[in-house]
Image 1 (cartoon, rainbow, N blue to C red):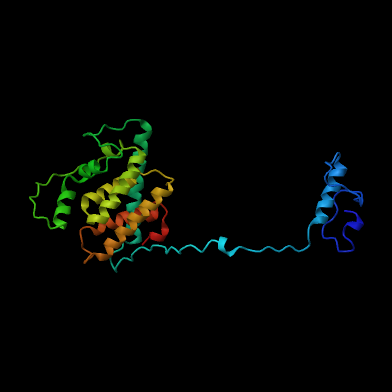
Image 2 (image 1 turned 90 degrees about the vertical axis):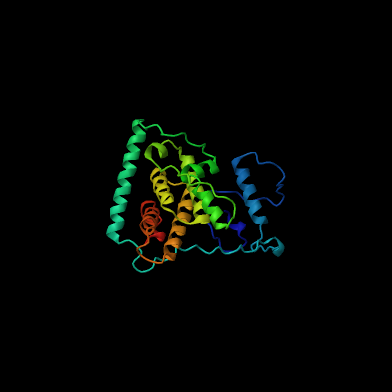
Length: 258
């Protein structure tokens, strides 16, 4: 800008456009009628700014630091419990092959009809009976040491492809959430391991944030259960390893990998 705009101070910015001097009787309330007058007004406004500006901070309005959330870690596998790298590669190859077959069936519109009627996508209790029969109810009764008469065992349905392929993606996500809740209540079982595997095989990528959080929770619970097993020959160990490996390796949650 013009030489008298700095009042002898060092100019920090290079003047971009020629601007005439601001007259002493300049009236800033008059709207600029030309580009030159607009630039003159900008010069006048700049001169009104103080070189150093301070502000009083109202400390009562400063947000307090939020609580620090500690990252949940996966329980480490005891020696001899985790699968070898080659075993993990083999089971991932089988899992990828199954997902390819599922994708082919979906794209061909030749999905087989389910052999039984499926519960609604929001029917949590009905799905529990569908997957486990009344074994979940019996387990709850045994856990509570109830003296009431126990019904006879009724088996649930295995996760056949003709069943899981007829469940919409939202239903798959709901079932993963519910199975995680059932796992927390009663622990791991072979039928639930089969359902976890089938649901993960049908879970579409990319994951939603909710689905990602859910399968990570499932993997951490499986790792915790694995760490509590009393022997490496436990019948649940293989299924637990499969679920942990799929979540960590196939769904790219590498911090949960063995």
